[in-house]
View 1 (cartoon, rainbow, N blue to C red):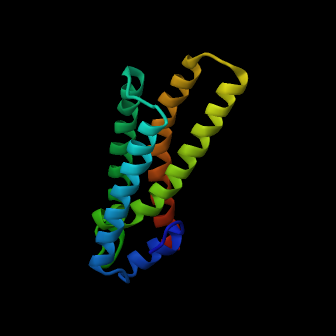
View 2 (cartoon, one colour):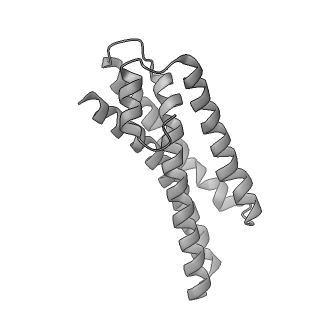
Length: 152
């Protein structure tokens, strides 16, 4: 299983070298990583969903829709047995790894700055509002770029 190298994974996928059971494992790993990284871990550090946090998922939903449509349309030209759904399922795990690591690194740096500078909680809330859409943009950006580089 690839954990970080999206380019190699996309190439393997496009060349139809990944079996169905491996695809299922990628999907399960993506679900578990998402559950742990954004649900359980966030709960334990004290993050709760408030109105601003909930509102951050509105632009994120538009980003998800835009990129799913864009990647779906760009993968129509791939020859072979690969479907766009398989691309999302398999490439989603390493893309989630990258986006999650970036999310938490930025989040903890922000918390550190928040404590050092003793700024208002409003800045943290506004940053969180912006970070959720950026997380989803980066997730799909990783998938899109890996497909493009695998075609080369």
